Length: 366
Image (tube, rainbow, N blue to C red):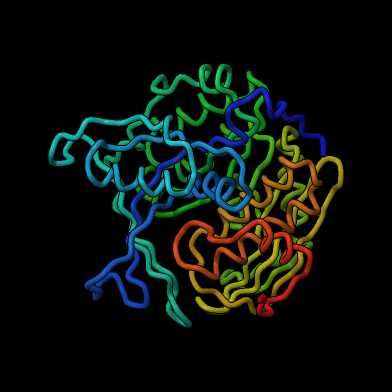
């Protein structure tokens, strides 16, 4: 793998993530509109990667974000601490008592079942994280003095506001200056872009960020909506997975963005909310195209966070220097395991990921 990593003993972190962390409220088997009880935990696309790297793969991780200093913010911090992710880089905002100036984000999420798809209802307007702007974070201190081998962020955080897109650009430029490897998950969410310019704005923002990225991650919709790279041979309901079409899409990506050292993309065929085909393909400069073990008719308990767990497994393999084929299988296995448990974040262990990535089964272990 032609990725040059900073020495492990020269930095404080193996991986840092930049993103919003919200309080997830889950009605379990019920619906948001009818439940009287919610289970709560933390979640956020970019944060989930840092947490997976810490809890599953035992790597030193931290999160750069902003929260309002009130009970909800401190509850989110408590979840972050339970996940083993360093919270010292959180930028705390003063609570005005009403949330008029700044607030913490909430994410109501239904898991879905059968013909009823998963549903997410985000309540994240005017959040502290969305109000971060260029100059708020001392990136040269973070990457130059503290140091991190890897930096991860993505299209969810970039879409929160015009200022967060600027923060991402500032961060990736600083990471590049200090020799930190950068990964980015495109993570297209139509609801985040719809009121600020739609796909045209998503492409404008993400295409400005892409030239600084070493490892680009996403699925077929992400590459199409965020980078304008079309994929042929996939029907509009995404029920068929044509590997050759994904290869062509990645070829177009690396032709346009020659800075990409590796690309990873998930392949999900949605047969129902409970049954998905699941796979992944990846490319690296050194090894070319590889494909993860394909898992047709995979049973889903909670699909939210599966892509983030794929990203953390992929990053772990590359961080360990194990090559793109093993890395993409770690990613696909970690994503598959994460979708067997509730919540955004992974409950898998490294041993489980490695065993499944090597073709292990779901037989009982005693």
